[in-house]
Image (tube, rainbow, N blue to C red; front, side, top):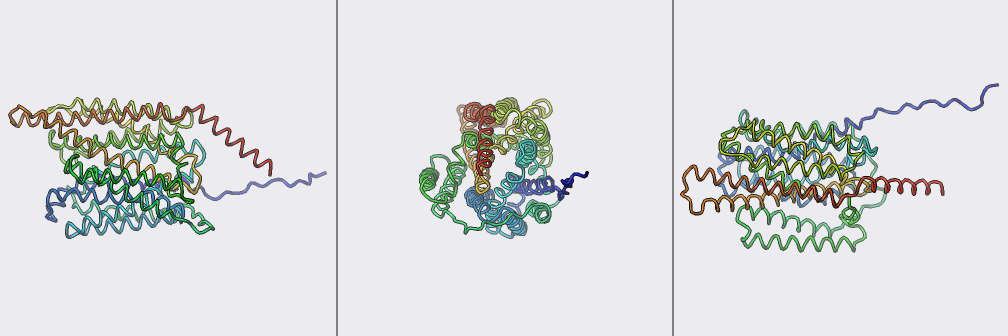
Length: 500
């Protein structure tokens, strides 16, 4: 007698394009991250070509950071409301167009406007990229690996930008530091159309929190501009005080608005979770420390050791390799097992050690003996932090909040970078000036004073990394707590299914 139950046939699944989709997302993230440093290398040449003054030079950098940092929350929410793939592709197209516009600049004003436009579309692109990653990889092990790769790109993109900017400036033109984004974006657009899933738009008409948009955007503009002005004109400058005070008040107003509106721009549930909130704070603090590295070590390598722009870019490669190896190898494998508390704490402590090692630099130090060990140790710490913080900052959020959670990560990075640049520049300048008091300003004394400023900046960065470790140890939940919470959620889901 034959069994009447038909033999189940194995359904053939379509090709799994998730990992190719990750490559597309990684390309876009690399473009946004390296653009923060690639243009810095080209600035002196661009200044000579377009003929603008030294006091105008900062606006080429500030225009990008102002637009990017202030519009990230809006960009993240737009990707939630209107679709992440459309936001991602729109961001790529706009970023490429703005880059081409900047590369063709014939005046200072033209270049600054193009940089601001880059920031606008970068604010749409960056949170869309991270939220696509968040909603694509949900399995804990795959998620750890995917975010390890993403964190490696985010952490090493700045160093890659220095290398690429040096090569393009030296062998092509400063304009190619902007034009290079066009082919990268084209690859990203084609890849997004082929490998990223199109998710249906919400059936209900989306709501946008206009009071939240207004208070958050103006508050972040004021904060970022305030720190930029402090770097240039000092902390006692009236405009610095006005901007920072206004920024704090506007952000406080933003929090009050979010508690009252029906459809908040940034639901407070995204931030108040201990794991996510701790990861946001860790990302801000690590950005403060990283700017101490990129800014002052670049000065040291070029002005003290006499490295060219290209040599400086190559000098940072070991750190990039350490970030990539640690994030994809160690961090990705350990995150599902030990949780973010252990990895972020260890990463912060390791990063602090790397900055302490770099504080040993002298006027005649050897790169291989002094700089290289510090860079490698620092890269290991950054790899542990980035692979864990990116994944944790976007975990546990609902799909409709994935974009704004991703935007919050990028916002904390941007604000942390602005604080780091202004604060460390001030500390270094004050330390240099204090060293010169009562001493004759001979070339040797001037070199020693400059070195004193670098040491101060590196020790301040070490404190920033130590605070990352403190946040990891005290704010983030232990892995046993995280496992118990996940089990409780699973039990509630199963109970709900059974009840239906």
